[in-house]
Image 1 (cartoon, rainbow, N blue to C red):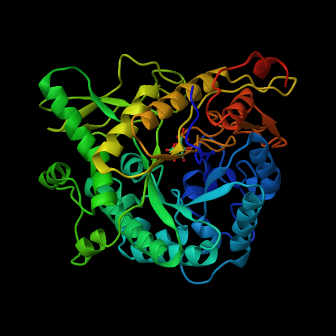
Image 2 (image 1 turned 90 degrees about the horizontal axis):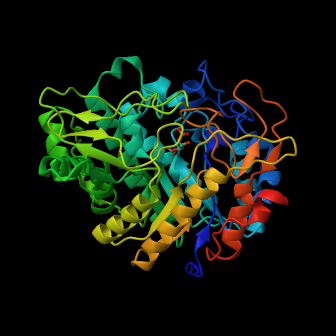
Length: 482
Ligand code: BG6
């Protein structure tokens, strides 16, 4: 395999509430995720991987891995505990320390401004993203961050996975009870996030010299289930509402016509304030960051189909899945019968990554980045401190090849940040489902000693980075000597 471009960034990703812990420490107040993860069957967000206290040890391991970039997120409620107003200096200091430590170790920081974790103070004040004021409060937060860190950080991610928030809005967002059955509200909060993204993008361009910014979009490419024309049309409809709708707003400043028309006909379209069109046109993303895990299929829905949103597998037993999205008269999502899945029913499709990158690059001609990609799996810590995660190596290896194919076909790809650098609190499955190159010794029920162990995939990725993607083979020594 030939090498990747010389300046290619090899990294890995996490998000604040999933790794930091210290949920109510040093002035931080609750975020939506501190509430969402209370009292469930999985760990809460109070300790997670304790990165807040082990930051230096974690960065040292990143350096050993060879990473030259790191995607993480800044917890809004750590720096502005009430969402607006008084700044928590200790919170800012934590991110200064992290960024300085990364830079000192030759690792480019790529922070995300928003990863599902709005301060609860704003939910209590006005129901969070439901209210238009959230747009301007987010801009206040973004301005503070750009002014504080803009001289050190040049690549920024604005908002994580708006498309997935629309699907799983109670898990990735906190929804006050009165809105739970309000289908329009899903698209209204998404609209507010788009406006917030626009204001942050403009601020980044104004305040950060040489700064670039883009959203991280959760993206499943959609294939027609069969070659029947009505299935092909359903796949196009799904592509428009689930993917294009977001890309068009980020890169062109308007919503995809077919998707918006569908929402309007079903009384689900976001309502526009008179200044919104202007805000939508006021700034465009410099790149698109893609979170890619799997692909999907679509077919024409039955005539009497009723609306349903994407389900989830909580058990980790294949097939215990609570159903796919259905949009009546538009499309029905289905799993691809040709693909294998993880234990949590996520299809494994490396070719879908090449397809995605080439498709977006051809349509929009913008640089791309991968800010998430990885395999959630059960891992076992052996008595000798080893973790033999060959399944993860296999998954990642195939996706790296897919990226290279996309680059060879003309895609400008800036970075690869697999999910995740270290084991963390999975948004849907706690610590049962692990993603990291680094194992964290804890379970949902027991925090144990939280010690770090390098998995076999750590050594594999180390070799990939050291050879700039030229050596992808799984050498025997990976599974025997370390
Ligand atoms: C993405 C999120 O949706 O996928 C991450 O940005 C998340 O926060 C990741 O952890 C994997 O999803 P899950 O539900 O397996 O944790």
